Structures are given as C-alpha cells and as structure tokens.
Image (cartoon, rainbow, N blue to C red):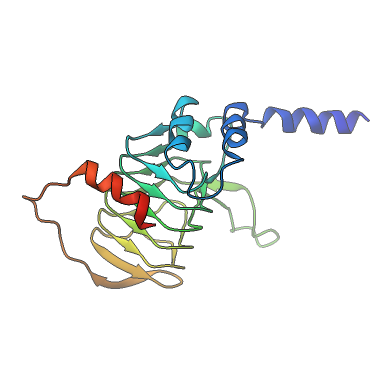
Length: 202
C-alpha cells in the first residue's frame, strides 16, 4: 500500500492543474472549433502566446513543472491539430509561423554513449522556429535545431540539423532541396487580413 501511495504522490507532483483546466474546458470542442478561445485560455494560465495566433486544436504539451515558461509562441501563427510540443527545454516560435497537422517539436533525447544502454540519461536542448517558417504535416524537429526565417520543412521530414533561412528541406534525415525566394524588404504585411485568412484556409 505504501508503494502505491508513494507512486500517487510522485505523479501528483507532476500534475499541472492550470494546463489540465485548459484541456478540460476545451475538451467539448471538435477540431477547428475554439481556434480563438484556446490561445486566450492558454494566455490566462501563463503561456506566452502572441496576438492573432490560432490553434486548430490544443497541442499535446509535455515537460516539467515549469513547462509553461519554456514555451513561447509569437504573433499570427497557426498551429494545426495533433501537434506535440515537448517543452522539457525551451521552444521558441516566432511570428507568422505555420505548423501543419501532427508536427512534433522535441527538445529531449537520451545519452546514447553507453553500450549497455543506448537510451541513457535524458539530455535536452532548445528548439527555435524563426519568423515566417512553415513546418509541413508530420514533420519532426529534433532537439537543438533552429529553423530559419521563411524556411519550409517538407511533410514527414525529420530535421536533425539547423535549417538556413528561406530554404526548403525534406527527407529523413532532412536535407536541402532548394533555396526559396527572399522577402521584399519594402513590403508590409497586413496583419488583420493575415489573421482572418487563417479561419478559412486550413
């Protein structure tokens, strides 16, 4: 009985009541319903999420007790359904980032140097996705990776190295496919139009 109580105590310490509350409040909503409500609820419990950012559905967010402080999402992003954000280290997502269905952003791995146990001690490294990048459906971003501004990660790619700005990468492991056009430095983004377009384009 004592071992069961100890197990309950350990698991209870890992419970994140604020995040749990958001999940319970959003549970009745199907996908693509509540896209405006979910980021507001997440901000209310402490997540740093910029204005105009929308979620097709709540992502799975994992991490230690301070995971709320380890996730930062910029303005006018769109995060599609089924995504996993592993906030055991910092995840920083810039402005105007598009994240497709079931994307995984991972910050934790294992020390694989011991021959008797390749999945050894947990190691972590932060992940950054810069402004205007697009992560295609089911892409996986591994710990320590930085995805540059305006880059595209093709659907299903596994990214283990930094992606330069305005570059298309794809494959397992992800490799450069081609360079992309650069932004017009004199151009301006109509933020209101951009935010409204998310509702009907995903």
